[in-house]
Length: 386
Ligand code: G3I
Image 1 (tube, protein in one colour):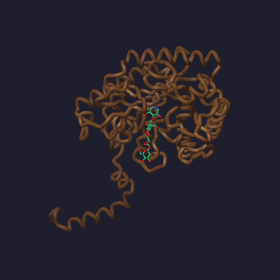
Image 2 (tube, protein in one colour):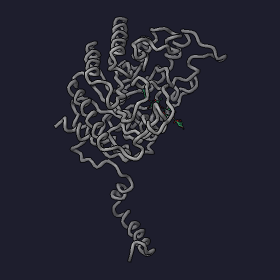
Image 3 (cartoon, protein in one colour):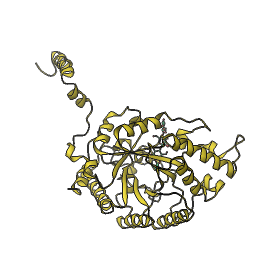
């Protein structure tokens, strides 16, 4: 019987029908090409005792639709961050109307799996709903009203997950890359002390959760100086800040490892813990946007900005893997200062990098490929822990 013969087709169907119920696990594997790595090659196990290895989860993963990614998560990671579902615009799109469904599920999954659960983010100018800053006539609210709204938001969200969410990005991206204050509505309406107030509200809402300031471009010397000076002022004023999150949206040639290290040391020198909170590595040409993660950056699609639509050349894949290894070598060197390293996604197909700062590109920024198989970087990171 030849493969072209229709009898062959029906024999295969029959064989599959008999085989599936007898070997349900094998059938499951065949449908889900997932991790092939043996248990001994688990990243989280290799890094145990050094720092948590986290991953950001998107809505598909949280709602349980992406089971293949979950297999990777459970094998290799022991921490989770909500990529989007805890942001103010998602969780309180209208005043007092809280949408907790996905956030509840995210927290319940982390509790069930015994993972470190990180909350992202309470006060961020981006994804903050417009109502936060305006009254019923569309006019800007007063300082008092915005402080009250901030307090209500933080108390409701942090209070709901008290004792379950271990740490929070209380304030995200309050500074520009030159170290000066971002002129966000929070800053313009309340003033500089909105940051201190946010930390105080978060501490009141959950005295046991660790509270962090989180930002990008943290290896940039001017930004580093701005963060150090901001945190010193917060500490002098008694604000309950426990740590600093360095996002880590890196590229093949930026930032410099030396500058990144200087920032780890400077931040830890403030008596705080340091986290790498949103690690990913673009391999694509970068239009001029400053190298950070300014969400408003947006460039038109051009073919030359998207050179690896079908596959990534071996040389570039290897360069990316080595770059990941260099960064993890640095993180391990400073493991007494760094408590968590979180990848901003599980596999390449999910990453925001495919859509920023140019929509619709094909990037390769994470540790697992689009089929959830470990990339060369995983092996190189593991080799650091032998
Ligand atoms: O879910 C909707 C979908 O229903 C809709 O069809 C689609 C149309 O555009 O949008 C989808 O929502 C998008 C969401 O990501 C989920 O994919 C939003 O438009 C998009 O703005 C959102 O982008 C997120 C971005 O923050 C803004 O919130 C990225 O996923 C997320 O990775 C990114 O994460 C930020 C950190 O929070 C802070 N640091 C920088 C980092 C990267 O920008």
